[in-house]
Length: 195
Image (cartoon, rainbow, N blue to C red):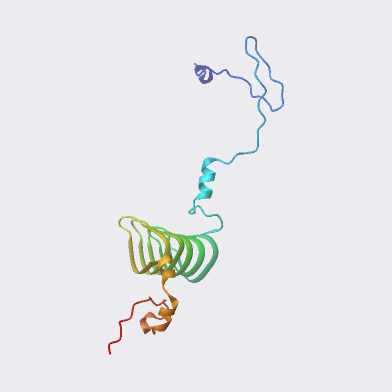
């Protein structure tokens, strides 16, 4: 039977221990000493992971399928992964709702990635991603938004940039209607008074 190592041009040699003297066979060129291992260099994938906002570090809370979490206040969580049902208030770095997961409540987050259902108030400071199976309803504010074909977003949806350009003086002059209590008023031009 052929030896695999000889088949590919290598010879079977006994393993060398570090620091042991190497034995040279007749007719074999002298090998230069093996370079000493240097400090580990960061790999390209590690550098790529550090630059991606989705690759957030920190603690991770997973609400698995068939689990219902109701009436909770979740904070200081790196990533909340929802595979079941959650009714809560969340202040964290990242939210991921799986395809069969559902979240209802108030959320202040850096990055939200929705494959399932969200209903409530959502503030995604950096980015909101709604995948093809995702459905988002309620008062939605976002830094940037990505909606895949098939994804649904409905309700009071605005970017944070447009929210900041609304003048507070105009909003304060107009009385709030009872159905809008709890929401910031939208600056609307008033009709000129007729004399």
